[in-house]
Amino acid sequence: MALTDITREAVLAAIAEFDRLGRDAFLEKYGFDSSRRYWLLYDGTRYDSKAIAGAAHGYLPKRSPLAAKDFSGGRGHAVTVLRRLGFEVTSAPNTDPSGLQTADEIASTIDDLRPASASGKPMLKQAVVLLWAIGRARAGHDRLLGWTDTVAALTPLLQTHRRDGESRHGRPDYPIAALFHAGLWELPGHTDVPRAHGTAVWTWFAEHAPEGGLPESVYTLARRSGPARVRMIDAITARFLDDFYESELLTAVELYDEDVAADEAPPPGDSDQETAPGSTPGASNSDYARMCELVARRERRTYGQRRTRIANDPIRISAAREAVLLRSDGRCENPGCAKPAPDRNDRGKPLLEVDHIEQLTDGGRDHPIQMIALCPDCHRVKTHGQSRHRLIPVLAQRARELHDQWMRADGWPSRRAVEGER
Image (cartoon, rainbow, N blue to C red):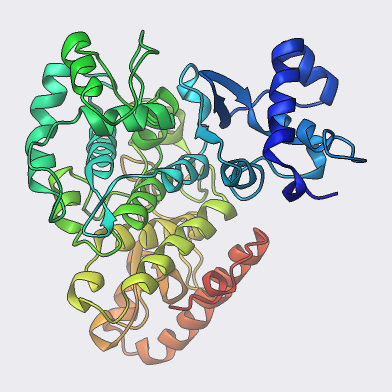
């Protein structure tokens, strides 16, 4: 049985059965849960894309329907097949914009965006709007903003950060309409937003002047989680800005500094503030692995090009430092010390000093595989002590061992990420 065998006629037959039985009965008959991310749009109606694809297989000659366990409903399988057959599939239903629950889901949805092009490259409008909103979330501004204020804030950004051939007017209605239909923007109380083409979009926004912003789940991740925030930023820069000098735009939206990967500081009196110095709340091998992969990906993407800019990339530096602090578990990583950090900062991070074992001026890298978290005493010895020449090789070996342990404990599949390769 192969999902790729299904035909457009078979899909249309499954859609007709869906209409005849009703959604609940259709899903129950074929054993599928309701879609959370991908929806097939046909003749003005939304259909659960994976269930439709599975049922369509049963309309092929001498074939049976596919069960949910038989195939993936994501972008790499059912979605691709349905789009190849000429159907429109969209990410995240407009009526449930909070359906995106993880940074990976958000990044995948960003990767699915299909912006118009200018000079053969994707236009930057959607990227500018998303990065601006993530910057607002990080700063703790209100999630939803009135239309007049949204236009006033976005217009100069859109006019400044654009490709050659991209419109100069700077209107945010078209990118916001596109993001709304992709499930990455919320316009409460509105479901009739036109698609992002033609004059109907401008007319609709002028008439309704909607309040809007990121879906609540996306806003919350961008506000509170440093790793999730940099995952979103990296997805946007990879999708839209791969060949574009991104630092000026990221600086303008306050997302280009060495604390961008840090979690939001907990409120005064929060229980995390009182955690013992020797432990790291919520330490996760998966978070460590993903930050290391982000560091390696940003380095690989531009290694050898614009070297000064890349060597000083605050996003990569921030992600690398946060990964090392996470890995340290709140203790000095010198194997001859291993003392708990003396205290924590306002964000709950252990007061350890993250240092490069091989200095950047000597060719060292901003990658956790050659970075180490040290207590103040060990850091002074490593930098100025007479025994530093014996200590440095020990620290280098320890950093590689810890990096390897954390990556393999998560079962991370990328050998490049495990080995810290460029």
